[in-house]
Image (cartoon, rainbow, N blue to C red; front, side, top):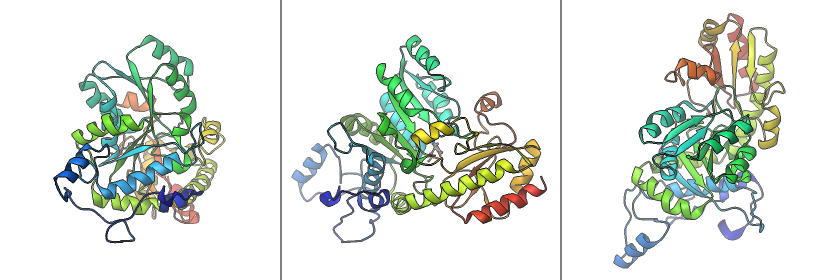
Length: 409
Ligand SMILES: *Cc1c(COP(=O)(O)O)cnc(C)c1O
């Protein structure tokens, strides 16, 4: 931490945790658009290669702009989590070109031919495809179970000794279902199984999985961390620093999924307002969910901040607020869903999530188009489901837009 000054609040961490000093005394983090780095002499070059950090050598390995983003996200995920001796936990982050790249580095550096990944329904579409297409072809097996049934999870683990890794996504698309991170992590530890959490929907402001002893956290930084929809990016964090610096870093460098300096710069700027944005995103989402729940044209609202949601209690346990994602089913099914989307006047019709403006999409025909229908239904993605990522507009305008769009469905 900079100057050893104890930062007590999340936004202070966002602004000051990373070491932003640079030779030009630039106040903003410089965009180090460089592939390679200069050595003063042969000795210095040798020392950089020998060091664990592999810094200032080649940008596929590390780059000073990435480093500011990595230090900030590591400080977010570690914020106020103490080890037994009272120190803040140490984490190592690696910035990637996308969430998918971060996940690829994680899976391939941790798994071998014949190993099995255990996961649950409701995964992000790209995660599901990565598992079933890429990992399977690489000789890694996938098992999907209902993580709400801990006995079933334990039975599977006992029956299948090849299960080496558990991947959790919580909250998850599209019904905003949550997984009990502490329960799964505790169970996994008994069997020496590594656990990762995709924390994209929650962000470290709302949920810090390392508090429950997980091994890895990953984000698509494309979403709330960047917050403005200006770049694709991903980050992988781990709590075993040696493993991260050796094996995981090696796979990261060899797979070539590194970020670039411009996108890292956009991410750094976006993260400065993460707390402010998340507070607004979440309070707007809560109001929109309550409004939708009472509307006569709506059959069902899925929002984990509503008492009617199956994971309301779990949300209170492991999240600061319920988040900014919700979905709903119109009484009129798919035709009404299309009309609703077409009627919107202010909110944006687009896939993705976590941008400052409200995004509305139709999972069955968009994000989960490539997931087979029978699988999609298990994920809760019915034909008429609408997914919304609530933005930071003034909430009256979101409510007015939704209200007018619902009139003629
Ligand atoms: C978007 C997303 C990803 C993939 O991230 P990209 O940056 O698009 O590669 C993974 N997981 C979740 C939950 C996401 O929302």
